[in-house]
Image 1 (cartoon, one colour):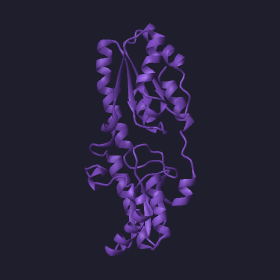
Image 2 (spheres, rainbow, N blue to C red):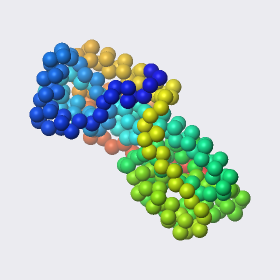
Image 3 (tube, one colour):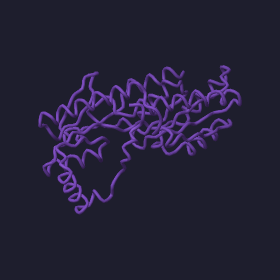
Image 4 (cartoon, rainbow, N blue to C red):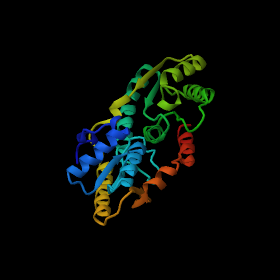
Length: 259
């Protein structure tokens, strides 16, 4: 329970996406006498799970991705741990940013989803948060930095989701508008490892228990989720057809708190 999901040693398989590889997987499951399969992952994993279901394999999906971009669940396994990793990095970087009176841009994962940047930015007290769901206004970000300087603020932390276009490009735009010294930190894969938080341990335990329960009941093609702190299940096709959107009220809160 104290180790990350990499303990499973799984990775995306290009071979599984071919007809030959898929049929080989079916034969292997039958050969090993697997009666039910718990598929842990994101959209791609669940598409594969649904296809296995169509071929007679009982499957239940458990959402696990640090991006927290899976519909029909408030949280995915790994998200809280990744957010806490980013917050810890912000806390450390703020010391250097203050000491040298610099603008620090911190790039976090999220090509299509700004969930990590938004939650970590609020919890870490970032001055600005740039995410792909909302258009970036570099003039507004720069004005906020300069207003902070006028009030005697020695540093600024800007959180940038990678889907915005990269912190290096954002850094150039900010420096062009403010003339201030900027530094970029790209956290990269450090967000994908480490000891799981208590929240993620509880979430994974609850998801796993429900997945086994459904399989024992003979159910299949279900995805586990958490909605309003209750464990729920939806058909995988239904879940994949939904869209997970950023809570605009939370995004507005980030701007209010960073004034």
